[in-house]
Image 1 (cartoon, rainbow, N blue to C red):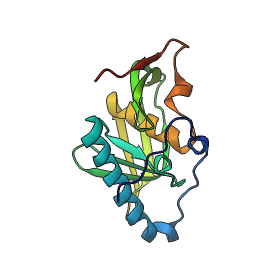
Image 2: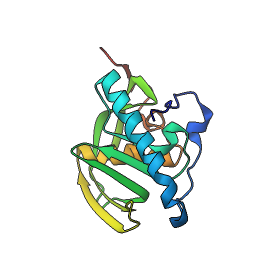
Image 3: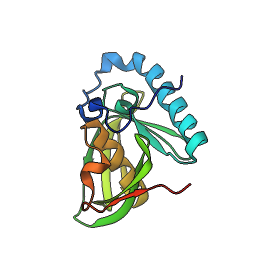
Length: 160
């Protein structure tokens, strides 16, 4: 079911999400379906969107959903950065669909997580995907891209 996305200004976006417990796994299928439906609806309306964090739909659990070539679910993810190389880029967010923000992120990251079978997984990411997962991971800690702006002039309106 498509859910309402919490928008910039909603104080709940700054809440820190709780870890998922193994016994909650059976309840996650509905959440993952809602994340998928919400992401697909956003794509249809804005022609953008590759991933979404559970807190963006009001579920304050440490779950990320990404759909690029296939659906991927990241439960209780942990990010690590193998080096200090960074990149500057324009970031967008479903919680403020018409605002773009210039941010700085690590070029590479390693994400460790549980999958829907509660198996330990790891992915090494570079460039665009590294940035994407860092952005979504921030939502789990109540951090928005607006808080990572490189300076006070780093905000732009999306041109349709």
